Length: 287
Length: 263
Image 1 (tube, rainbow over the protein chains, first blue to last red):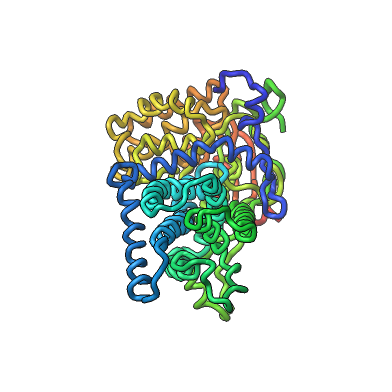
Image 2: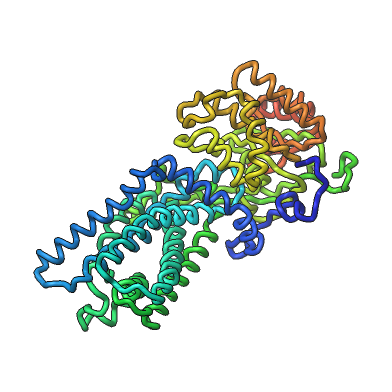
């Protein structure tokens, strides 16, 4: 490449660098995101390579991604339906499965995001690149692991005779909310993991409790009245509520739940992103 | 400090009033449990390191510049700053040209992945396009002479193979500027000769190099100028023979001479 004349593009893209102190701990946004965009292939390739290394791209690897949460859904179904005693509406199993699948996408992104920076240590210490690509790649991996479960849900959806119609166009909207939220969490915990290497070992407990507090094992509108004021404090309340309304109840999500989900996901994305970027400089000396 | 005539009249690397401080944790493995258990006890677990202090220098295009200094002088930190890995705390670094790095602390490889996957990922992170990588991959693999090992996980590599691949990646990126930190001991005698040939080729083709080494002979042979860092400060810059002589003398005399000069 050095033999080529410096085109205006090269001038922008990596032939001329100026490194200056970060203002208020943050790198300059425009070049940062320009570089991020330019190197997006790295995030995809990393995800692809990791899935290949974990054999997730084989048939049985894909099958395992489905079997695991499906078994979990069955366990909870037995737990709620039989031990809980109360008879649930016939759509309950579909609701439970769709909820668990989406919940595992978010928590999976959080868990693999948490280790994304720490495990990228060598690369971080030797290459200058926007480290945000690492949690982005983790979220992308979690999403790809979620896709086969979505296909399985589609089968359940049809088997359960749930409505199919234009309201399903809201599915991508809710998924977008969930993805932004998942990425925000991935960045938040990726940064925390650098400072507290045991943070990840506390996460599974948090995830389990969080699952019970989220309208997955129960329906959002069946929540006890006295809990209503505090439910919106659960970031997944809006997203999961909308998810269930679209898929199970078969209508467009209520404006309130949709807005609540959007607020939580954008807020988390922004907070996670800023926290990550403000600490990014230290990664190279802290890992 | 302009030394050699340059085509664009601007240095390849320009470092101005560079300060680099960072915080390090004194714990081997910082944990939440540790932080909670420690609560209420006046115990400092963070230390601020002033690794580089008020350093300014230029490296004109095509020059091979050596960096010498004792352990902890800030050489590696300086290299990381020039590579853009560790942004400055104060001052400014300006780079004109495509940079490739070969830094000592790990080479940016993940042991669970194959050599090929590591090369592709590392190059993508460094900002190369897939087409460029495809174009360079054969060259890299050929130069490293790893054969079938390219498709094996890197944890199966010997340390020599590891450094051969690292060296091969760094020099085959067609860099305008090559930053090398203590990585000249790559591989066996044969590969070392090949490596040093390649370095000379790069230097002859007006490649700019910043070379950190404790092998003072290498500095004298390869560099046309050298700087000497001590405890983060730039002590002296000039002809490599002179700098190496001054540095060797300092190592023998000990610290007192320097502290006196410093005041």
